[in-house]
Length: 407
Image (tube, rainbow, N blue to C red; front, side, top):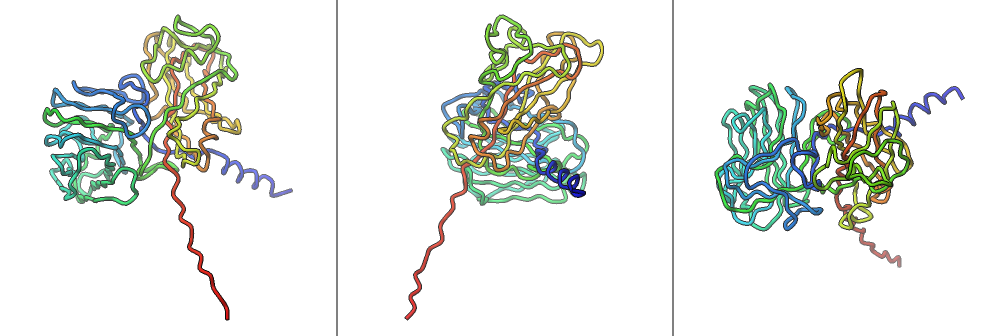
């Protein structure tokens, strides 16, 4: 059995989850801009609503009363490589110039590479002033998918935009800019919304994704996808202490299942000061909208933590168990190192993106989520959830059979 170690090593490599450099995933299903996967939002007229959605229960709406309205996905500063962004967009009447965009930025409108809807056409722009305008006429009352790629460089950067009809895999149109200044020094955020003029049209945004070129999957164009929410549904095995008036007397799940909506933080959380003490929680079923044979793409797990002091080492992490109870540890972070009241969400270095591979909807519904302190110092968790990206299974067309008759 001298080859057993090699065989075992190969098996472990196959069994280990592949990790993406997916920087942000949101279908707005948490119904919250400030305390969930979004780290900032601004502008009157920006809201989350349920009347017009691409998938799920919620989508964002912009009906501007100011010249700025956006939600922002932030990530550690990036100086080389590429960033890819996706957004599904719907409008009721053509927006004013600059009224709808994705802006990949080092901060603010003036330092961004973007796509823009202007009237019934679209365009891409670079920091250096390059512009390419499409010829496709955008129709009101239809969902479009916009994807934007930026290659970072002062002089030979690239901006590429693809326009799709909804979930199609064939672009309606592609725009390119080459040899551009694309702010290579400090890319750290993507804005979804508008820096344009005030307008009264209704714009809707849904199912966003931001990718990086590194990692092992989701390292290029996000492609078509819809986002469903999963969160704790019931206790499996729990050891943390329920704390706060909004926690049930019977389940730890009740303390951390606050989304969609606003996490209640100090009014309801679970607490532990014992190193590696785990809470394991069963997750909710996925919406009926997700078919049983759906292509399950990824699970993006976020959480919200706090602590009660800064003495010693205070770190923690969330946990994922798959349908076979194989455990995967999320990134270790120090969000429980600080005085009480400093609740913070997972940033792009603290969430974890799990490749769902060939798993089925039923498999994903059998996943569990949890958390643990790494040190014997108090950590607190008030919210835990996952964004599940999926798409309908490809339609397989059968081959026509032709009878062959031999004389």
